[in-house]
Length: 410
Image 1 (cartoon, rainbow, N blue to C red):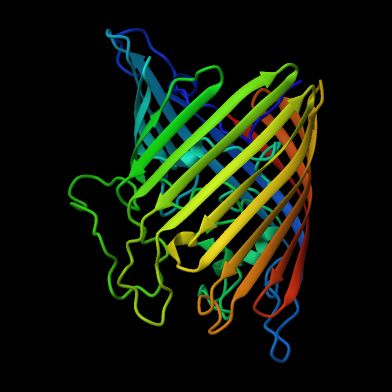
Image 2 (image 1 turned 30 degrees about the vertical axis):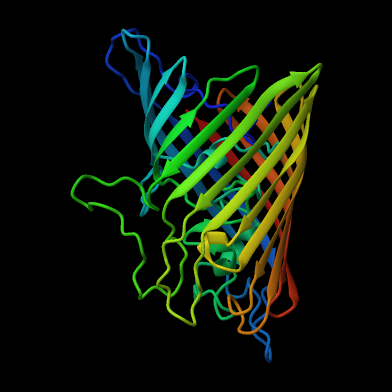
């Protein structure tokens, strides 16, 4: 039985992700990564505008596509004469994009635990868990939409405004990042300091702090982060300041029952206090999450929950999300799973429509399968249904999708 626990983040141990060297040897980097391709068809609601109703979100969008996601990962470590282990990890995106580096950090590990410094997610996201997904090629619970029926809700054409005239992408996303996820990670890979305790009988705890909402830059690019956003801002999104996070996790067993449980909290301080009157107002944002996955024999069952107040530092916009899933790993090469994710976003009056409180709801259902062809190589497929209840026009939209893909790890 092969359990690919991609629905969880392993307990943090630098030695698990880096190539060790002999004491006092210089660090030698190894090359790894992944290379995923997917092809999918989607049946979207795509009627044009009619009367006072806007065009449906699939209007003027295609019904099939090929998607790619991949990284080249450089990692390595060495053990010093005093017994401390020092290492680095650099993740390079497989396609040219504005943020070419993903995680990029160094770490020091000893009997005291692990100190990490660099560009990474907050501790609450690093240590989180979720339903036992086979993979995230077609999994709905992901910080980024890869290849699935969500395409109609995240069309790249049209307005990107936050009001009813904007695409639905702007309602559920910030920048290029989708928000259908129970992982508390609004801040992405901000440059920060991290500490993770040693693992005690399956328990581990972590804390992180980032002074600003940006990755580290070469010397001379800037000196110190500004404390307040400029008065020209019309939205506080992505103008958060300091980010604090704490988290805990347990990976162990009770008799024959495998158990993973995780919980975390993060705060993003407000930095857009000069937002113009009549536009979105800013506030510090708090998020907490909890997840539980149980494993028995070839089966895995679990889920997770996220609650986020003043989401993306927008005062009066709150969200909560949860997922549940059941997975089966055969004693051979195939596995299967079924999942449901739900997210709800509540907008205070004026945040989306003047004088009206609005609630949007999203549901994603997935039936997934996977077959392992060999070490690090697998094919996957999925059937999916996504529904979106548009609180602005009181109308429901649907996407039905089918897809297949190949995943190559190296």
